[in-house]
Length: 270
Length: 300
Image (cartoon, rainbow over all chains, first blue to last red; front, side, top):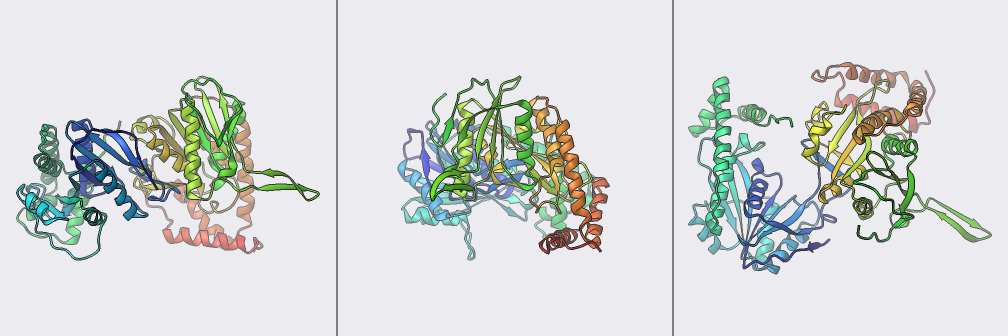
């Protein structure tokens, strides 16, 4: 089990942004991809997958072979480190420790994990951001950026909470920020949530990017859903009830997921 | 070009121009290994090296004379090349390692060789276990390691995972046939796995299924843009079908009756639900296994 650092980016107390695969609407991975492209971040290291992932074959997802990728990218100009990774299936503590090793080696000031969480809200609503932190003072700072710090939970832990714990045990401040995703977009995409998350990170990290590309995506998606609402009164009724703050039954929710999912996930053949 | 360390051993260093690589190992029906071996033979590809097997594989034969160890034989990992319109490297592994670290290391070694010679694309092949009848033609499922390859693949006579009934684009490729392409992806190399359909009631038996190899070879040679004589493979596929027919006729009628349902699945439109349930499939597999475990039984 090892980490390989093959670059020497010049960074000054950067932020580290982490995203795990397969969250709602793939929000975390999309934010990382966006930041990589926008900052020109370059690959400088990776965690070797052997020992953390069963390598007895490969999974296929959406017709394509998948393989664990745990690569670090750095933008010197924006003072950022980025990591998009599959969640380790073996020895998660050691895996997370390696991430914190990299953070400490490069003097990272704070680690942020970003991801999407499904909620029973309409796609027409503003997207909120919720955070969990490992130090109260960080929570107070994030509140100043409009992040909701009111989450209370007791139950099974996830890789994100484990990350917070490992970072705290090593004295590193860390936060998980969840973007709110309307549940019927969780299996497809939510460009509005991507924009909300990116705007928050931009304010937090003092960055400035042009997000007009996302505005176009948001408009396209909403136009498609509006057409669906016109064609299917049932779908319109479900979304209308969500807009009014009403609940749907399980069956209604599943029907909405199916209808919207089929509409939005039609692949354009290359 | 760089250097290649042990366990790679090259007997010569052919001058190759952006070759593609085909790698094969044994598996269900030996679909991949039979296809790649046939390709190697018909192209008269030249052996040029090996990946020394002792680090990855247990020896399968020893010879001792007068109490003295004379020879130790290991399953082979041989490299072949063929120059042509598209230069090719073919790797044939006689056995897959069992340990995870050995499997991973072997995949790395194979790709080290490939990249040493400038390979940018790797092919593997194997079996797709499917609810089909042994009398129907095996389709070929294609799984790339990059979405950029989907357009090219659609020009060939293949099905993608999303086009296989009940799969929804999901699945897995076990063993080195899949892992090699995952590691290739990590290294920025293109990779395609062609999987020939093997009837699920045949899958557990250590017999080749040349019908699937034949289908895979059709697609593989088209993708590689090579042309080889398929007559021997056709004969091999026919012989294979005769052998399976004998095995099939030796099964109890009640098992054969269940298997016959697969014939109607193959003939049904893809959109129609087949008459086979998951429970049927499990029962067929169980009954066939029990039959053979019991030594074959007798016809009633």
